[in-house]
Length: 138
Image (cartoon, rainbow, N blue to C red):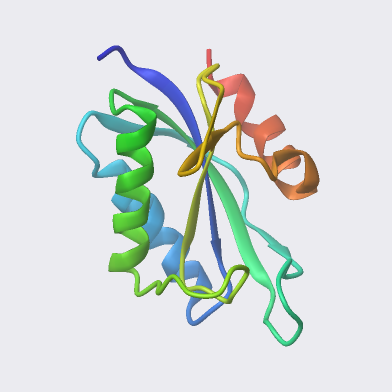
């Protein structure tokens, strides 16, 4: 499969948030047929979920990958599990959250994968991170 540009958002609001982001970046870089081309600055944001959560650290990485969008999403879920993430209630606190924000120009709206990510227009920090990374996707 030819390589594609992929933007993956990382977030953490439990434990050592900086270490979880580092673990996520390293795990993404270690995926087969994938390399991290650039990473945005780390930004602290208020949680989007229920009250009582701590703030998030967020970052986005630009990948060049030969993995399909579905294979990349499955790899992201495995990386989250390895970081101790337990999927439960939506918007719950998490050690590591990896979201496939964009995958090339691919557009899809399937139950398990929507591209671009459906929350993209509602997350100002993702907009800033994309703006920072897009010049590297050339």
